[in-house]
Length: 384
Image 1 (spheres, rainbow, N blue to C red):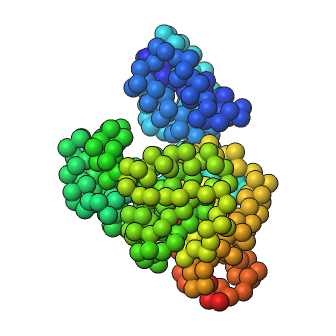
Image 2: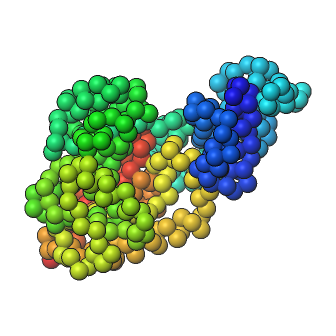
């Protein structure tokens, strides 16, 4: 594909996404239809689409229109690309710019690239970190790895990865964390990954797991386990008895294979109550995902106030179901990948108000940084 044809493909995909088609579904459908597109073409088109969605409001303003063409004009203008070399109308490239499009919009006072109705909530939660977090949401997310310290040191994991063309540096936030600098596309085929020595996991999740009061032989339930990333991170710290549950069982489909690679035994359960009490229950609850919007940028534009209200109701219901299963002197952990107060401290305050015999022993709101997603966690202990 020519550079212009890649841009035109992104324009058409963005039009579909703006009409309501989820980004991943639109991209998957395009890849299947476009047999002519090579791997580099697919990567380039995907990058265009996600970069435009991360900056949807500002690039639409720069491009002069709230459609796929406007977004791509704004995105390329922002990167100082010579638009006349792309918008030629030749060989599947987009049509030549109109006079209005050539003029463009001013660069000052561009709108923020977060939903207007959430801006005040983000600022309330993050305070002095709010503006920097909003700016970082416009960039691509880092790729980070968690080293399975039960099986290999971080330094040896780096050596193993390097032998397969994956270059990393150590994270200063998590003792198990590595940040990928080169060779990200080679990770899944590397020996270190296949042997369960490393797993893809954001640094913020690793920070949360490192804060947990885990000990060997504990009975631990990951209540909203999904793919099991947090559970495997806990297993990388201690040799405990691990249980996994998720309300949507299909979310657990990748866990058995990941657990085998890591050398971890996990009991999956549809009815976690029958294995209670647990010494620790980890509830990484469904949320807005606002701390991870760099990775799923279309999600921030699809989220509505009604969606958020339903999400907070679900979060409380999960806590209310989970806490009776915790043993006396055991721990309940509430976590979200959110930067919204209504999903974080508001929820933990509600829990403490609605229940007795519990004490919060620690909490932390992690802002979005260059090497870390936004994340929140609170640790409660059952006193009686």
